[in-house]
Amino acid sequence: MNSTAIQDFQKSPLQGVRGLDVCLTPSLIPLYNVKDYIVVVIDIFRATSSICYGIENGAEAIIPVSEVEECAAYREKGAGYLLAAERDGKVVDGFDFGNSPFSYTPEKVSGKTVVLTTTNGTHALHLSRSAKRIVIGSFLNLTSLCNWLKTQQENILLVCAGWKNNFNLEDTLFAGAVIEQLKSGNYKLDDPAIAANDLFQLGKNDIPAYLNKTSHGERLKKLGIEKDIAFCLQVDLTTAIPVLDGDRLVKL
Amino acid sequence: MNSTAIQDFQKSPLQGVRGLDVCLTPSLIPLYNVKDYIVVVIDIFRATSSICYGIENGAEAIIPVSEVEECAAYREKGAGYLLAAERDGKVVDGFDFGNSPFSYTPEKVSGKTVVLTTTNGTHALHLSRSAKRIVIGSFLNLTSLCNWLKTQQENILLVCAGWKNNFNLEDTLFAGAVIEQLKSGNYKLDDPAIAANDLFQLGKNDIPAYLNKTSHGERLKKLGIEKDIAFCLQVDLTTAIPVLDGDRLVKL
Image (tube, rainbow over all chains, first blue to last red; front, top):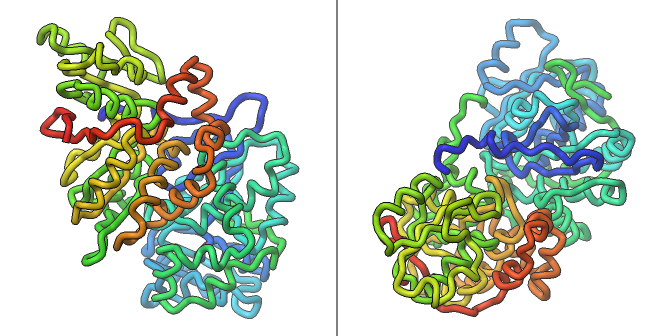
């Protein structure tokens, strides 16, 4: 099967029942017929947490771009843009900030448009572009997001941004938290969704402690951003749901 | 990051500590520097279970090939070859058998060479070819395999064949079972390994019941192979460890 293209295996949800599926890493997005789903993009540490916080705090829009160069190009478009670029967990030299949620306070972002590129989060977003709708999830807006998802008569694909195209625990755990709120509805879960929800059962009583053992948690600790991590694990601090409108994330 | 090749993210184990990593699907194999690892290929339902059983039962060798056509080509090489071809869980028309373990009894395979192509298992095997060594794991040979792995001073990558390039629970659960036996050693687990072992904690007291809820289990039940499933979930029925030697799987 070396000659079998990944697209040959593309999955569409079952007819009749709504699918509630989890794509564990951006590498696996080609396995899903993304156009059949509402996609929730998840990058808990820290892109989607910061996006939720920024939109809640009055940012007019957040524009996710793939490359640092695309982000830098907005510098010439005027002073209305804040430029945020992060690679491997660090702010890229010469940019206003990266994706620490503490850079997305009302004082900094209210009325502004932020142009953002991150290692994992914007990558997942761009690969999901053909979806019926793309919204942004994090622990910060968990219940608000789930309440909205419950009103949608659509299949849902929870896309974990992961770490360098591979699986990570924090994004998967959040997917499991979404499933926990939705699963009493008439959804069919795929295997990754079952696993994500099972992992959430193990972690839900103390999410920070559960995630403390992960490799990514260790990596972020080395970068000195423990405060960011604690911030991103707060549940229901915000209610805004960022949604992709053209190439801009705005308040739903 | 659309232009970022998956290979840019390749992971090598840390120096000093042995890595114990889990590759959740064949799609993710390019994220690992496979040549730095002993690879265990896992396809519980049913390829690697049948391979363990066949080698235990005296098959001289099992030759995994990618394509049905490659398998058929062995027909002309003589009567010494048994040809096994399965796609989507069913025996391909015109072949001796597929990958039901009940086709790999001593009466059928002793002294014979089996040429095998399956949907997921041989795919994972072929993508792992650059590994230091490739061995085959299943619940049937679990403890024997783990005892051998403990004697190896090498990094270990557990490669789940999954279902159509995506994650499945049964292969991941088995990876978690291997980690359970090895984790007291000096290994560094990656996030997928932590998750696999956590899922095993949830399932270990009744693996058939745990797996009963998965989509793949349902799919296989529809194919009428419940007996195969029960067979493949027997722990430590065998002791042989199949190892890849050139293009043939033989007894270690």
